[in-house]
Image (cartoon, rainbow, N blue to C red):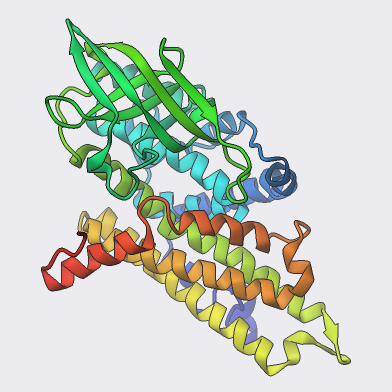
Length: 396
C-alpha cells in the first residue's frame, strides 16, 4: 500500500508508518525512486546468485556512474554535488538491494573519491575524480591492517623517503573493491606522521589478493593489499594532510552512508516478513493473525521508522553543516544494531524459509554482521559517545 493510498483509507502505510515520505522534497524523492527502480530491475533479480557465487560485476561501476551515484555528494570534477539527504536516500535504496552494492558505491565515493577530493592535489583530483565519477576507474581505501583495525594509529605500513620518491612497505586487510580497483588510497606511517598516497594498481610492488570463504558481504570484492618496496613519486602523496585526521574524515563520510543504508536492509527484511506473515498459514490461520507474530512485526516497524527518522535528521544537520562526528557515531551505532535485530526477527517469522536465498533475509542478516563491525565497531562507537557525554576517554 502506498502512502497516498493510505491517506485515502485513513490507515497509516504499513512500512512508512509515520509518513516520512512527506518530509522529503520532490528532488529527494526523485533520487530515491531512481535508485529504487535501478535496484528492482538490476540488483534484485541477480544478487542472490552473486552472493552465492561470491562475486559482483565490475561493470556495476559504470552503471552507478551513469546514474550519477558515485561521489554524488561531492562537487566539481564531474560530481553532481547532491545533498547529504539525497546521498543517504541513495545508500538506503542500494542497501535494500544488498550491503555489498552499497559498499561498492560507498567505498568509491565516500572513501576513495572523498579522500582525493578533500586531501588531494589539483593534479590528483583532475587525474582521478572525473573517471571515478563515471565508474571508468575504481578506487579502494587502505587503512585497516591485519593487527590494527580499531586502532589505526598503530598501523605498521611505513612510507620512507628515498631521494625524491616514497617507498611503501606493509599490508592492508579487509579492503573492499581492492581486487578490482584502479587506484588504492593507502595510509602509512612516515617520519613526518601518517601520510596518504594514491597508489595506481599497476605500480610495481603493489598486489591485491582476494579474500575468499566469506559468509558475509559475499556480493562484494574484499582483498588484502600488499606493498613490497612499492615506489611512488612525490606527486603520489597527499600534499598537506598529516596524522589521523585525514583517514578519519573519510571514515566519517562512509559511516554517514551506513546510517541510511542499514535502514534499507532493515526495510527489505521487514517487508519480506510482513508479506510472508500475511500469506503463510499455520493452524488454519495466517501467522500474521497470531499475537506473537504481530508483536515481532510491530517491534520491527517501530525501529525501522525511528531509525529512518534518525537518518533523515542527521542528514538535515549535515546539510546545514551542524552534524558532528559524534552524531554520525550515534546514528551508525543505533541503526546498524537495530537493523540486525530486525533481520534476525524477520528470519524467525520466515522459519526454515528464512535461511534460503529464495528470500533476502538471511543474506541481509549475514551482511549486517559485517556492517556492525566495519567503519568502527559498536564498541568503538559506544566509547566515542561515552567520552562525549562524560568527558572521560575509556579506550585504554
